[in-house]
Image (tube, rainbow, N blue to C red; front, side):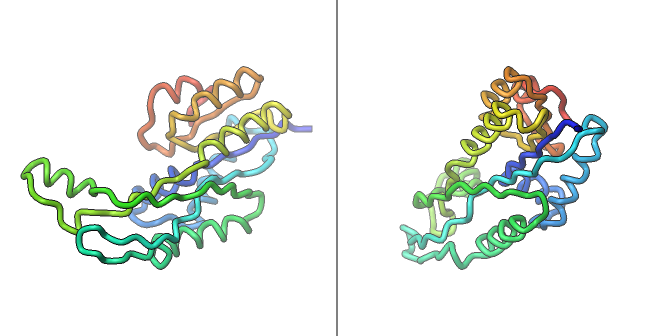
Length: 204
């Protein structure tokens, strides 16, 4: 019996990095293509795929009121909601995919990066368009870490390919390697801290 491997995709990282490369929000086909590329890597020759795990949080459906001009923003009717929800729904039906969902929490408003840069250069009073919803993901990293631990402890796979740039996963990488699992990192050519690379056996 051939050894098995699993692919773990940090959805937020994947959509951001592929989106920057494509100049548009990635499709299911784009993500599947990246997985095919990984599966064809020489390091995985003679291995069988166990499963592809995709981790992300469904977009928020909260309605927020801009504190400056009182405008109500329904996040559930935004283009971001539509495209993100559609992507997760389609990935759930893809062969060999398992979608793990965290949660998204809307925590009011924050000043956008462009507005912050502008105000640092020329101080002024914020206006309504300077603000953007402060939306945070919860539980995604935790689910990735738990699955890495489960796969290694139960010896469900001999190796994993983690597609991420998140250095918060370093403890999970270290744990899996101590349990004898081979840990491979694929950062899609995006920026990644040296420490994360240091705790992977091979960087694709």
